[in-house]
Length: 556
Image 1: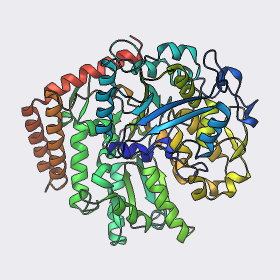
Image 2 (image 1 turned 90 degrees about the vertical axis):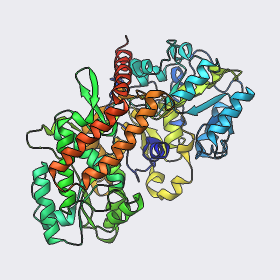
Image 3 (image 1 turned 30 degrees about the horizontal axis):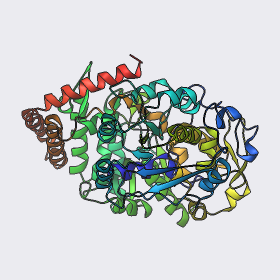
Image 4 (image 1 turned 90 degrees about the horizontal axis):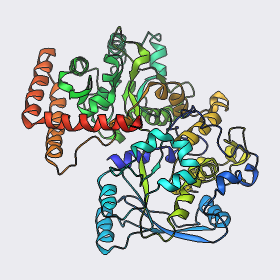
């Protein structure tokens, strides 16, 4: 489920003391991201410099202000305002109150009802795409361009390229991004069981040939261990694809399309995809991949990792799955655990040109301000404050005096004694992340990375270190592939759904193939069936959207 995955892996679910992994960036990808308006001079009271907190326009604290807010997800419940330390701080210091409107578990119906009755909330959080455009075309959204120029933070942190990607067909911006980033993110990759790896002499693990030899060794010496775990829905096979050619992206395998010059072509013509599937099928029929790869649930994967019954893992969300498994093993045996490794490659492939991870600079979703709002500028001013340094510090890490008292030269909070003495489950009760609606992954993850690497090695978060050292370094910018798929109810959208269904069916057949020749034959069959559906029309649509995105990103 896409939304829940984003919720689980997005930066805002990551706990304050590093008990879970980071999700964003550890470097200043936008050039000036680490030197923003609040450098710490006034951070002791939680306020930044006047330019950030009180730009020309709406003045926080002068007049109490409230607005209604709706989150367009079935599974989301907006917490009561003032119930958490950060929303209470906003209420007391900025004099802003938010009145939540709940979806009641039926977001699509709720939104349709509000549109039909013309009783929209003042602001909403929702996915980019059709719903936003439906509201825009109905004249229900406020253009934000004037405010973006007037208030400093969004423009500074998101940058022109990201903002250009948010422009609608009329050239205006109606969307305020949430958890956007200026630098790589990602959680996918590889890790090994340390005890087994050391017991077997820590053989070289750099290429797929090395992997095959090591898995055979594990199989013969540890028959009760899964040599290679590929995760739920065999996601690890998609991750392996990245290692079969320079500049490969796992995104291509998921999309079932790849860049062929200035066009997108069917993945079934891609030679590295053919090599990936023949290799995966070989491992599967030799019993080196878990045999329930296509049917197991996430909880089953976690249980195997927590009990040490996996020698090598490759797959999605590896930094989080590995962290949970590592902590479980280490809790029972201080010498046990997992070790995150660099992505494996086909011999001859440059290991520094392999991208199992990808990131979208636009982040997760967006906020929109509706024409129902009496003071749209005040709402924008609040979101812009939140996405700046002071806002992110208070909303994500808690108000000053809670888990931090001072900030460093770059505006990152310096954890205090309470940060280290408070159990993570107690911190979680604050529900700080539930109020972060204009997340700035660059600031948050840079701050968390600095905190993490300043800890003694034995106290560092396993997943955070894996991200800083490997997964973010092997992540490609996939922003140009954002929103390139046709609408589900269009002719091309219907074809794409059929193509995806066929691709899933043939993926399983390829894994279960009796030999390499059968794999290649199945790839040709999949190509013939999908082409027969009119997949070329989908590829033309995607190509045009992709090229338009590239033009937007370049400012054309």
